[in-house]
Image 1 (cartoon, rainbow, N blue to C red):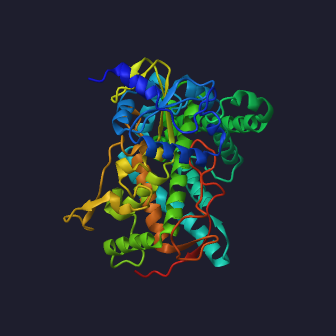
Image 2 (image 1 turned 30 degrees about the vertical axis):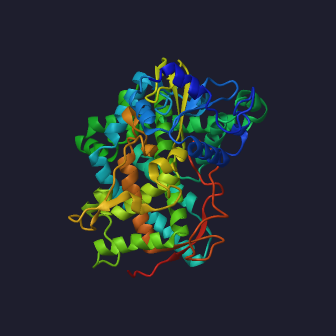
Image 3 (image 1 turned 90 degrees about the horizontal axis):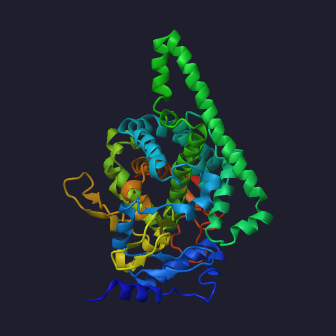
Length: 500
């Protein structure tokens, strides 16, 4: 029988490539982020499901896990594997006491507000009112760009769309991606992300951190302004209530279900509310916009898959020149299984949060026998796991939406979307911290993909219209806590003739 002690010794001798005396893997982490992704992918191919050691000077001891059994163990034990001081020290300036950083009761009260916000009622409002209204503005902009043959940054288009949508639904405010706040947040997110790769970030930021400090100040001030505006609105609502119950009913329909109101109902400290609002704003707008960007990038590189989405729409709406995407059938994204499969496959290859870091509150042993001392770091690289040939097969590196489909003769399309456990497909996390906005993100994505693919043609700048494939010239992500595309996604748009 192999003892835990023996396995631990074996694990500690399992060092990844580029491991050097004294500095360990420290130098590797200073390189560009997309190169670091490739290193994690190479390590996964070398070690498969085995846990291996990672060592960076000034950081606690750590391991990288690739086995779904180990990841499930970590995801389900939120009290044992927390964000921890390691994560919070680096992200505190930007996220403060928000849900991304929080543990314990502070996390629970923000989680409860989020659960109430992502209710079936709000999801219905999203599909019936919010999405059609805001996407109409986006379509008008793309139509004008098509007429002018103007180069469009599709990443910025999607970020503006999600910023306006989340701003209105969650905070009852008009927000734009071109605002100084958005630019400050994007810069701060990138700079904070670099802290996780730079073991001496405290030193380097003494010299080079002025812009980050300025950006964080602007972001924090914006968060406080969200709270201040809401406080004023709530005060006016109380006055209106005393004057007219009818007016109060109208106000309730408009804003009582907004996320900011739900946060203020549960949290008395306005600074914490501001942090929570900013955290949810980042999670709601950035990850969805980036996921749509990578999806359309892949569709432009794979035009036959794009055409398959159109065939699915035509089969579901054969008598309609413009598919009725506001119909009740689309309250379930699985009503368009192929389109949903495309989105899942895009998320697999380009997960919006490519890394997850946890810290052990007490010593424990993983299912594979790896012993973890207290305060040790557990890294799971979603980017690498989602490209694992052990989990996804020999074509794991290929964009193949069909892997998400299985035959279902009773359904209108004859297909249904496969469900994967979070331990194998951790894009939406799992366990107690599973993504609250998953359903909303899927609804939004399927709606946007189907609408824009049906109504427009997209041509990536520098690539001939209709030519697929990948290879040299593939786009990469820039440094960030999420996965924005370096340089955006410049392309040309054409209004499509409505033909099947």
